[in-house]
Image (cartoon, rainbow, N blue to C red; front, side, top):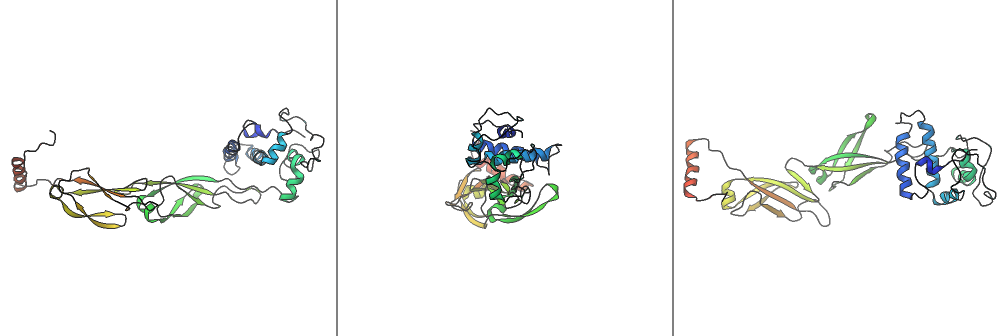
Length: 301
């Protein structure tokens, strides 16, 4: 039978870390998955990738495989070294080719190295069951829905729709796990999971920064100059706040603990914006003329 270079199959060095091997496997499995790949040899490549990962992800199997040394080349005729079975590694052996006909569902090369032990654990005569790949998608959530929690319908590829529960207080970058909604399993293996990466988007007048919520509040010139009590809309409903006399546009008023929940909770910042009323008639225009004459004020000085 032909020797298989599992490192070459995954495109990694023999010194690759566990994380590098996992990353390479996920990338190739997505590329060659028979359900999505348009490659003519996708199914064969997918099985080869799965076989390589089955060996290299397992420290014991990888160590045993590495004992064969780095001198073997893919495609060379291979027989397990003397004493391999006595060492507890060998299994079925045989003179088959490089096809996927062994008891494990992998190649005869795999079974010649690990077949016995693997078949005992997986069940001799049964095809190897492989879990589907985890998948990631993105979801936009309004500040209001993120604050209160919500149920949303998302539409995935192939016309698939899912109901998703948005947890209360979720923030940008957090992930929602949907068990069993990822890639399909192989030979009856479980489906992978789907992870939705959350992006909280501004909601009308509400803006989220970390766990702090910002809201803009329009006020009149006289409310700013003289001070007053006004109502401001928050994520928990309207509340009354006191505008300090002499306030200017851009001033931020902090309401501790009124932002997103947490330990500690975020704050609510109310940003003041002075809105000047229009002068639509002679009387109103005269009012501004009087202000002009009575105030020696230049905001640009």
